[in-house]
Amino acid sequence: MANRNRNLIPEARKGLDRWKYEVAGEIGLTDYSSVDKGNLTSRENGSVGGEMVKRMVLDYESKLK
Image 1 (cartoon, rainbow, N blue to C red):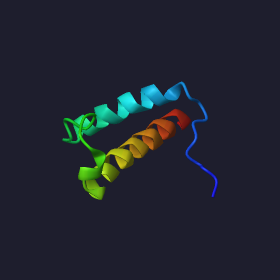
Image 2: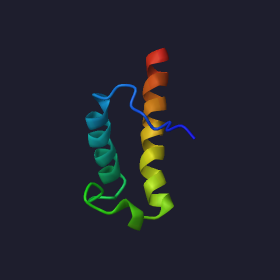
Image 3: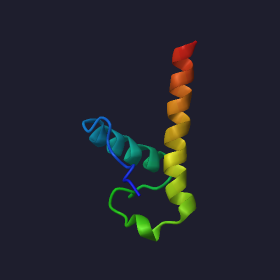
Image 4: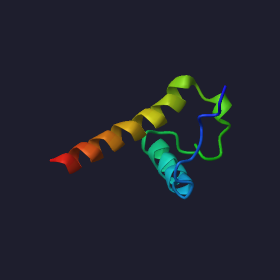
């Protein structure tokens, strides 16, 4: 199976990581950057990604108006 986890814009990786840690802190996962992600629940890890997607969609929708 092909590896689909590739960076279309490699320069964006650092910014997305920084934003991921910011979002994690805002939802209560204060040491998210240093914690072993394997020790977190699926709900905790999913909350970070879900919140990021939610904010991206809201940002895009606001730009359409």
